[in-house]
Image (cartoon, rainbow, N blue to C red; front, side, top):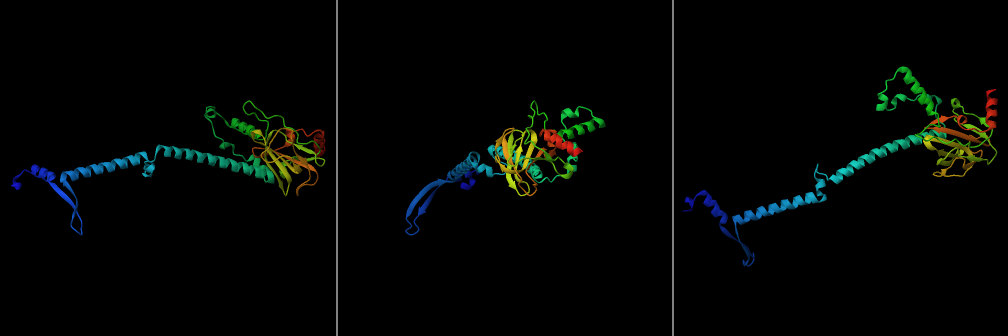
Length: 300
């Protein structure tokens, strides 16, 4: 009789047919628990369970940090942090390169290891071109003039920066010049003969970036001034300022001495550097009447 029922009714009957699920004690065969179920109940329960599991999984992945473990599904905060870290890394790389270049310049100043011919070997064509410069047509003569002016500016410590200029440089000490600026002999300084313990003064305001003892040049103090100007004072008897101190123009920073292996008497070995390039201090500082007399005697 059942075989004659339509297929739909057969399926409907099977889904609604009730069964008894019994839990029996294995030892005593005593009935402990039973459930009345049907195939339709099982399908509905399984569907609801699967839907609940999917809902819980979705909530966990959308509202908790677990979503960050899905490839390509990182959170917006994580992406923002990654971008910030990338910019920070780029900034650190640039800063590291700047610090490395600065330390190389300081090392050249301390040891004087710089060939004079290198000062004219700069590749000025590497300077970036601005849109304003590209609008102006240039010729060969104009380019040569620009190169000459640019090279001259390298040795000019009184260059204009916007509406500001460096103050007049203060003489570090006044006295006879026992040796002048001789770059061809790698003497990028002037030697000022002084009495023992004469005061040595800062030529301008700045920050002390080096104040230590060296075997070759004794007590050395180095000051960084605005616009890339660097002043160096060697063979001192003692130092009045330490690294990191801020000094003003004319402030006493050391006392004259004859320390270090390269010293031949009480004097000040004074150097001036601009962006890593040495300059003749007598072009910018008046060391007094003794300077003129010394220079005239050397020319004769």
